[in-house]
Image (cartoon, rainbow over all chains, first blue to last red; front, side):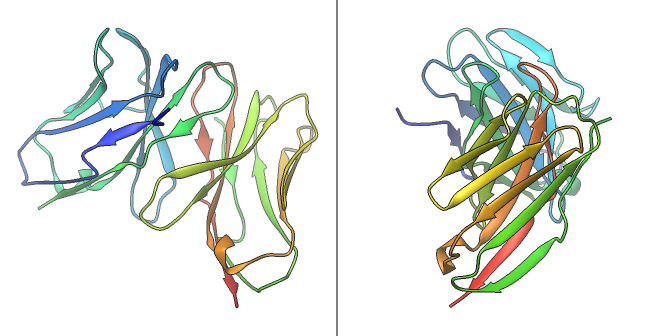
Length: 112
Length: 112
């Protein structure tokens, strides 16, 4: 069991470009969560997805951010027209149910 | 709105010392509480998960307790080692499949 796989580990984008972050949950896990960790701040919830459904997106910025978890393939967090303030570590977690979450190693996004 | 507080933000102790890390939360109606460890530039590693009906969980030198009514949890680390140096995060959920709400973490340094 390979655990929660996130790629890329590091991503550099220029202002105005798009960033696509991928997350493959653990085998058998149907719940996927995205969190963002800004420098000097704690981890903040962004979105909770199950296959083909967004369950809770209360933590997602209203503009430029979107997430999906298609029937086949990894979950994708997409950030359009990135700005410097989007620079952060983005973590994905998966769970088979609500009993315990397994986190990936994160994608560190740097916007230059 | 659930808020999780971890004080102090940083702690430095000599090797061999037993120590307690504190976590408090404002809404006692939690579903479960999880302690994580984060090494610099890395992802989160789950240490202990306590269900709301439980009072404590143990794993090796780690013991986590939960007092739901007072909104507190403690992580006890016995015989600390330099390898325990990391940031320790406390997080709660308030329902099945719901998001984790994190504290900002306690950065522990164990001096040889």
